[in-house]
Amino acid sequence: MKRLPLSVALAAGAAMLVACGDTEQLADSSANPLLQYVPADTPYVMANLEPVPADVVDVYLERMEPFLQQMQASLTDARTDLETGYADIDDPQVKAVGLAVLDEFDGKLNRAGMQSLGFSLETVSAVYGHGLFPVVRLGLDDPQKVRDMITRVETKSNQPIPEQDFQGHAFWRVAESDEPMALYVALLDDHAVLTAAPRSREAEFLPAMLGLERPDRTIADSGALADLNRDKGFAPYGSGYIDLSRVADELFEADSQTVSWMSDMGGYDVTQIDPACAREARLATTFVPRLVAGTTEITADAVGMRYQLETNTLLGGQMKRLVANVPPASRGTDQLVSASLGLEVGRLRDFLLDSANAMSAVPFQCPQLQDLNDQVRQLAESLNQPMPPFIGNLKGFRAELSEFDAANPDPATVRGRLSLEMEKPQMVIGMASMMIPGFEELQIEPGGDPVALPQELMSVATPEFEAYAVMTQDAIGVSLGKGQKDGLRAFLDQSGDPDGVFFSIDYDMAALAELQQAAGQSEWQNTAGDAAMGDADLEELSRAYQAMVGRARVELSFDGEGLTIDQVQTFR
Image (cartoon, rainbow, N blue to C red; front, side, top):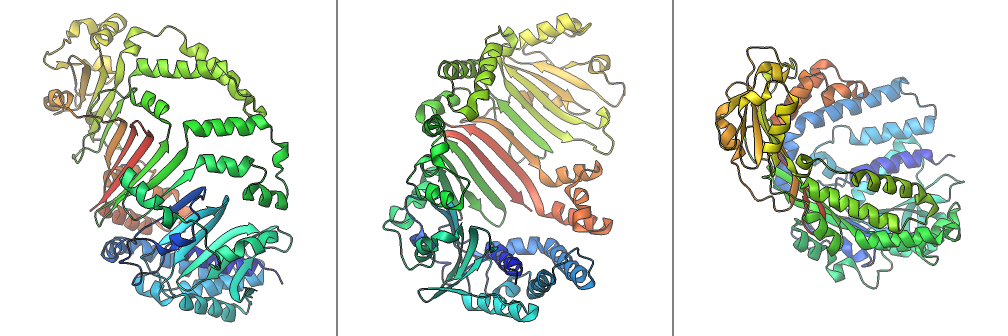
């Protein structure tokens, strides 16, 4: 009998486990008890120290009701397709298991339904590496209910899902008979655990997987995640890291667990890797030692995430010097989009040139990286060319768009302002005067009043459109559209410490979705075929989405620690 039906059943259960976990037992805990299973020296980990509060989850469930209804409709359609034979599935065992799994979740895509299956919508979890092989631990509300669900799937489908035994502890092994890798699943006292590992090494990893053995020192003992949250400003609802130096050790050390296990499965022989590749990979980790990520907030009204590519102190300091004193995008405005870019172009060019020269002086020896040597050399040659003075003075730009008709993309529908930030804006005006006939007559001067730009200069021919330009000591500003001139000076006079932020964008998510829909490019329309939804359903989901979302903000920073990306999304 084929094992594929078992794979289908457990994969469906695993997908639901990702979103579910124990609530009453763990909601008040200040630390995640599953971290007691995670080795302190794991190459990577992502876990939460506290579950998201139940009242916050309830708010999002209410907002997501239209989408959950659509998921229920899709589930019903899938059952119909399987029952009528419309679905292209030839294996009767797969069909039987699929129907049984769909039947279990039918009508239960809600809090009460998930709890009836043993799951909950508040959870603690941990994803980490046993070597580089992933282990997932997910808190459960009632493991026995989950086990009962699997039994019902067996009964309904008439397909046995046999359990394996290790020292009196049950687990499931999902694998094709000729495959060296397998998926392992077990239900413990308060959580589920999943891992993918070589079948030949079961005796080595099952004791740890089943909780029969604990690491000598754990992430819980070290307090690594609590320290990470404090240092990076993360909330307790999810954070983690990838230690790239440990990843390199696992890949290139002949006696590492990962090398040993991968060698067992065939296709990986560390002795065949050029030593230069291992050496240069480890060298790269001295510049970029770690990737970190975490939630910065989860409330009823907002979700925030932060990602950071950590660098060493030298590289981090060099990148921070590239940030120009340009105000970040405005916050909480009524603009459709507000954006800002602030980089010292002259310094950026010098930084890239110095980096390219340094890499050219010590070229890559790894055979797989040889092509990069030519690319680095070409980059150095192109950067070594004289740079026009006005390019070297550039610091960035800012823009605000308050109105735009995507269904009628005519210049007359545009309302907004933009600025070109630089040390000596007179250079741009001087060059424009020499290159554009009639521009020299506009008399745009620092501190002067806004000057109307003739439509012929803008390549626009409509009386409804107007554009004005004004110059300050460090920027040239342009307003587009009627009524935008009056706020142009205030726009240029905006101040704000970038604090390492070199790019930022703040936008109205509902308005953007509306524009995409008007332009025929909405996500709902693009996925209509896959979702088998009609126009009425698409319009309803689009309206629900626009009613739910607020503004989104993204900031990219060179903050001395590396490259940091902050994202915040608000809800109505």
